[in-house]
Each structure stands twice: as C-alpha cells, then as structure tokens.
Amino acid sequence: MRGDRLLAILLTLQAEGKLSQRELARRLEVSERTIQRDMDALGSAGIPVVSERGSAGGWRLMEGYRTDATGMTGEEWKALLLSAGSRAARDLGLADALDSALLKLRAAGMPGKPAVASSLSSKLHVDADGWHECREPQPKLALLFEAVLTEQRIEAYYESRNAPQAASPRCLMPLGLVMKGSAWYLAASEGDAVKSFRTSKLSDIRLTGEPFERPASFSLAAWWRTSVSRFLEGLPSTLVRLKASPDAMDRLQKMRYTRIVGAYSPESEAASAEREETEATPVLKLVDVRFDTLDYAAGVVLSLAPAVEAVDPPELRQRVCELAEAALEMHRNA
Image (cartoon, rainbow, N blue to C red; front, top):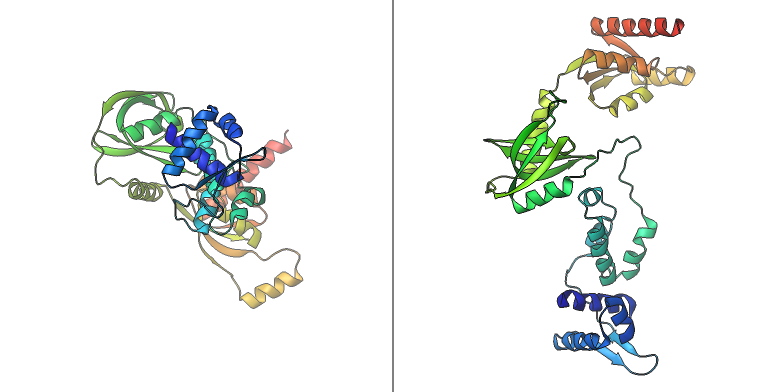
C-alpha cells in the first residue's frame, strides 16, 4: 500500500505542481504526519522533492524533474492513450482499471509534448460500436478470464448451433479468449481437441479450482488463424454471375457471406464511360460473386433490384423469378 501511495504522490506532484501537505493528506486519505514520512522516503530514494514554507508553501518536485520510467516514444504514448473506451476492457470488467492506468500515463506526460496527452481525449473520440450491431450480453466473461489466467478447469453448459434447445454439460480447460468483432470466443481443450466456444452460449459456468497444465507449444493467435481458415473453407459456396451497377457492387462488397471474385465490363471502358455520361441509368457490369447458398443469392439480387440482374446459373434466375412472383402475389392480395 505504501508503494502505491508514494507513486501516487509522485505522479500528483508531477501533474499538478506544488501542493500543500494538508491537501496531499486529504487526497490520499492519510494524516499529515504520514505525508511527511512519505516525503522523507521519496527523498531518501533520490526523488528531488522540495518543501517550501509559508502560507503559500507546500511540496513540489525540483524544477525540470520528471519521471520517465517507461522510456516510451511519443507515438507509443498516443497509442496507449487511444485505448481509452476499449470494448475489450469494458466487456472484461476492466474499464475502471484502464481509466486509472491512463490517468497515471497522462500525469507522467508525453516526452517533449505534455500538452498533447492532456488534450488528446478532447480532440479524438473512438466509438467502437457499429451502427447495426447486436451486442451480446457477457455477464460471465470476467469469470472466464479468471479461469484462463489462473489455468483452472471449468464446468459449464454449452448451447450448440445444432441443438440450441439442449445445452450439454462440458468440462473444459480454458486456454484463451478471442474477441472477434463484438463477439467473444473461448478456446478450450476438451478431451484431446482444442475447440472454440462462443461465450454468450455458455451458461452455469463454475470454476472447479482444479489446475491443468497449459501446453507449452500452444499459440492462441496461431490456433485462431487456423480455426478461422478452416471455418471459412468449410462454408457452403455458390458461384454466380450478376450484372450490377457500381453502387450495387459497393454494397455487395460490404455484405456478409458475400465475396466478389471477379468483375469486368461487357464492353470497352471508353464505351462504357461514354454511355454512362449520356444515359440516366448506370451501365451494369458483369461480376462473379460467391454466396453461401443459392437462396441467399436470390434474396440479395431481389433486395438490390433493379441495380442487379441475375445472369448465371439458370437456377438462380428461376429462383429470383419465383421469389418475385410470390412477393407480388402476396402484396396484390394484401
């Protein structure tokens, strides 16, 4: 506790300059006599603390002295200060601890540019939440984090994708947590295999207190890259050819489970540009796109019509017609 208090005194004087012994005692919730002993300890440790007597007196650091225990560059300080408001820290219940750590960094100041650190938060704000994200509740994330750090087995129930109504009991060895977008995943050993578990689907989590030996060769980052690659390779894939306007192509690139693999104009670029200048309707360009299913592709084509036209395969054109006719019939009879 005393070490924390000595550091707090040092950072406070560095950030604010001279403070009276009474004010320091009030802020740190100790007696003035304790502050006097702390100042003696700082002086004995080589910290140049100066006492000024009189009504306007107090404690301050010697002119020009600053602690720079980190040796970080200005760019490194900026990067750390920008971590304020981190979604990961918030989900893990560490938001207050992060704010406290950043306050200490701001007190220490940036090398050569102290004003930049103090004003950075007023000039740049990062909102990590997307416009249309559905945030998953993570009430047990801190508990899982503790299990990962202390390397102890957990017991939990997991709601799998194939059987959402029948959660099964699991005994897991938690190896790490991964944040993917706004979702969290637990990497854990079960039997002889390392698997990923979406944390929002884990329930009734219990720390058993039973330790396990984490494999020395396990790399969380490398395992996750391999896991994601295998997942993507295992997804169903349907290649289709469309005609799409430039705006529709931009929208296609932003859609989930959709990947443009080729795009080209059915005519020369010069002729295409000339037609776009003279016609109100933009020229539709040929584009090859991979979707996970044919039905999904048909739904996307309808949602973007008339800026998108299905070209190939014939089954796609047929499915688009079926969906369009069904929608037309439904709305005519409404």
